[in-house]
Image 1 (cartoon, each protein chain N blue to C red):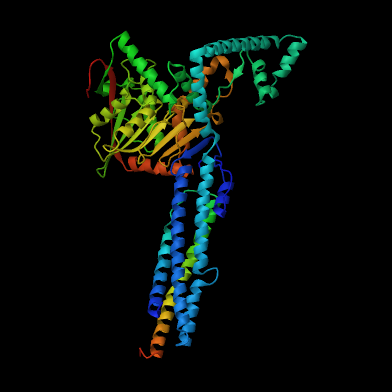
Image 2 (image 1 turned 180 degrees about the vertical axis):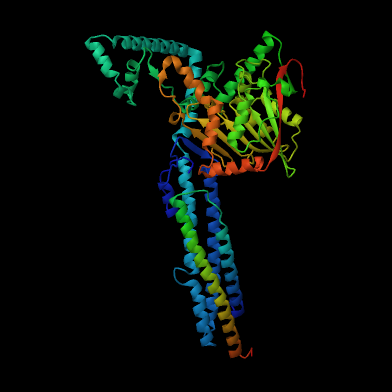
Length: 80
Length: 543
């Protein structure tokens, strides 16, 4: 994979994480109550928080890989 | 969760928790089926599991992209070490640790599996003994029927049974007389029939209630309608098996037996008198209503209890009448409530269609005059496609409501069906039509189709145990009629519907919302028209 493709991969990962988060948030009412429902809601909340963090991290990764891409281009004399 | 007890367990915390949670019935009312019912839950769990599994795949795909990006950065690290170090750290943040993409993907996949396991726990709970009993009992009944036809064993068994019951009754009566005798035998009988022994739920209690208690007649309790419901398929199969020819293993022997009886009743009507093969449906003028009540003075219903109160009121109308109420709201919208009373005539094929012939035809799934009356009444009243209609019926009226909802599917907009004490377990209902079935645990009528109501997302069944509120415990045997008729009273079904107001149950809440959408709470003008269905000779249609 080239660095150009790596940047696109990170952006794609960011979009996948965003889509997964939206999908998980939209998982509807499972029509139950009690301890099982509480366990599921807890797990979903944890995953939503984790995906929020991962979405931000993916944004950082995009920037960092892009910066590295620029630096490498400079190093091999293709950029300025 | 709909009054079901679930057992067993499958991997996953959610499934394990499901296995520990069970009934929610904390009083005399039990709710099953509907939007919060087991099957609805199964469908929601299965759909939720599939969605979470899809999410896990998305996250796994994101992890794979990040991994490849990490490799690309590592491969070029020598060319720009500083930026590579930063990029590598940022990309690894996506991949490493319990909050990383791979770990999240795995945890989401486990959550999906847990939801799937929960659905399996519920599915296993549905595979109860009753489901196995039905085909076995039908087979046994059919075999006995075939046997009885050839050997005469059944008449002999019946005679023996009759003699046995007579002997037991004679012995019980003698014992109840002897218990007053000042003798050791009398003392023994008084001891056997004391209060403590009569309260025993086992065999001792049966014997004690036979010889003890007040009055000369023994007190008794009828078996549960649920027992009758489970036995009816076997009894119907026995009757069908006893008919000439080999037993044909019907899927629904109760419906088939009812169909045979209905055809025989129709044939008997043709042979013994003028066959009433036509049906006339005519508007009933207000002055013709009993009690001097006009047909337009019925208030707009607000909920299920009000609707059933309208059904109760139709019993004051002439036999065979149907009440069609138009609700005109201030915003110009219009809705309809159709109230259908139950059986009013014990005959078979007479002029009044609310009779036993209609009951047989409804149970058998044959065309019937009562449903036809309702459909024609709705059309005559001016019900238009797209205008929501709420159908409500008591006993036979509930069966007719179910039949009508299926018959007009695609032409009129049936927004809901309410049945009270109606045997509708074998009747199909379009999946977009919600239904609420009210049943009293001591009412035998709803059990007469030999099949429990299906627990479907659009069908909610409420069962109320009347013993908690009404004095219908053991009664003298001569008063058994009270046990048979009182629990079927429509007025008590109105009370049952009132008990459901504001109840914390998802199935009931969803149905109440659906009813509210029809009835509304805004000021409205109501107009109630009564239509009378009458069987007539040689008339094919009239309205």
